[in-house]
Amino acid sequence: MKKKIIMLLSLFLTMPAIANTDREWNGIVLGFEPPSKGIFGDMLGIRPILSNNGFTFNSNYLSQTAYNMSGGYDKNKHVAYIDQFAVTFNQDLERWTGIPDARIEGNIVNRNHNDDLTIKRTQDYRVLNNDQTQESAGGGSITRLGWLTFARSFDDRRLTWRIGMMNKTQEFDQTIPCDFQLRTLCGGKSANSLTWSNWNIHTWGTTLSYKITPALTFKTGIMEQNNKATERSHAWSWSTSGSKGFLLPLEIETHTFVNGLPGAYNIGLLYTNAKQKDLYKDKSYKNTWFMYAGMNQQLTQHKNDPNRGLSVSVSGSYHDERSNFMNYVISTSLRYRGLFDIRPEDWLGFGISYTDFSSHYAKGQKNKNKALNITDYKNPLYSPVATNALNAELYYRFKLASWFELQPDLQYWHNPGGIKRTSDAFVLGLKTTITF
Image 1 (tube, rainbow, N blue to C red):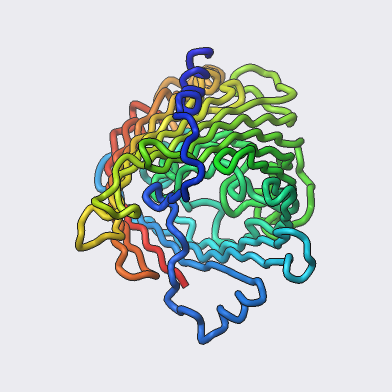
Image 2: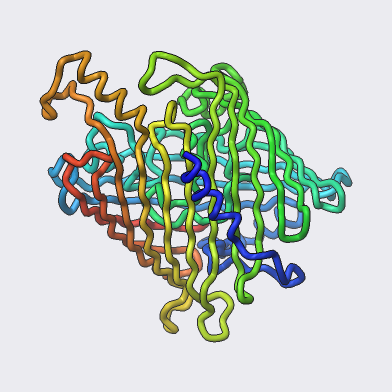
């Protein structure tokens, strides 16, 4: 256990000393591009009018398609398709109230189709899902409130306070973008705790972030752990019904420079006082913990263009395997923006992720088989025993217009779902993004 903790901590502790903090940090090559001009432009002057009154927003359409070329648990061919519409908005209140940096933030997501190739074809349906062919799949066809919060700043904008119905992605684990279609390569690893959710699921909470220096930020907060937050009845609910306890996140994030090139690094610890059930033993625990870390560093600059070049990211998480079916997850990826002079805004990406499954989860599966006296893997009641899994993805993203991106990808699944009896799979994917 100590070796694994040290391995995760090393992602952060071996990072370079903070330097050149007087320089302007540019994260475009790391995957953090500014909002693109939408297909409707200024919307006949409506958008500038709203902006002049402090209201800004971004809206987009996303679709993700996946096709099982070969292998997997179910080899019958299937084209799976999901899509979503999302609106994220910000209302500046400072001009009306005089409160420094005061604002209302919101996010609304409409998801459709819920056609997930992972559970239909790629992996054995009898084991828990550690990855997805389409990272935005899940939750059904539904419109949800992702977050609605009030925020303001103190101490010359060094301290930021946020409160309301919130989501962790507003504040935590923001060093790696979500550009791959595989879930394990999409962003950081904080969601692997299984105690809070990504993107379009809200719970009550409040957070504080403090800039110790312009480049170094400390983040913390108290958030609700509510297992009912993912249910349809909670899509717009203000209720705390179903709350099991509170989450206490702690994170340190830095934006720095290495050899004159920008990088982002973070390490986080998440504690919850909610009761957790052991996956093997007939017992529960009063609390649990979770660790995550990430780094995203630009390696090269293409000619003299700071917005083109190669970057590398590494992220990992280490879990309490008594109650979490994953022991640890590690991912690494390479991204290149503007590889070809003729297409300076296109992206090329390649990533690999490795999941080691919990020994308690494996023992629990074996116990179920023993209790039912089942040894035949083909029996629908048999509980397969997960060990480890390795997934990889290669994509190329075409920036066809300021408002339109097309991203084909090829995925490789080794031991899908951690089951060695499931044949390795190749999946062809296509991701489409339209900005309005």
